[in-house]
Image (cartoon, rainbow, N blue to C red):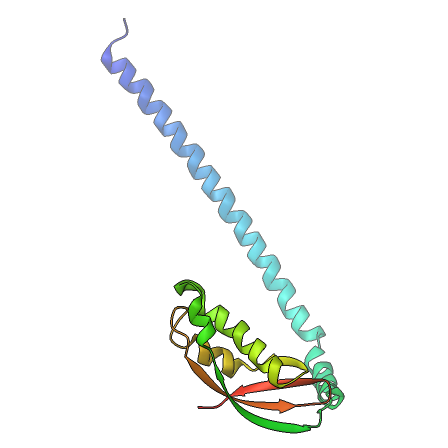
Length: 153
């Protein structure tokens, strides 16, 4: 049987070899990351010097604004709509149901495609999913093809 001292020496030797291997691996990883950083540092200034895209984008932006068509408002209505039917739904589905009820109510008044503004959505969801308002006051602008509803306080 080998003595305890001999076993201890063998274990120490293995531990030292493991440490050396780990140190080599760490050193290699650091060299690789330094090489990557150097490559990135070399490429970045070249890209900045070459690109002149912001000027081109600024020239295109006004064209897009000109392309937008402003539809004529044919009619404006202020309507108070009841959302009591939304309260027939389960608690955790009421706000979503209120949106659909609102669309249905607006469809009865205006026979065109309805678009809701974000202000209407925020007003319905203000108190959470379970507590939408009982009524909502809406300003509806009717255009040629569609209508858009805005929230009024």
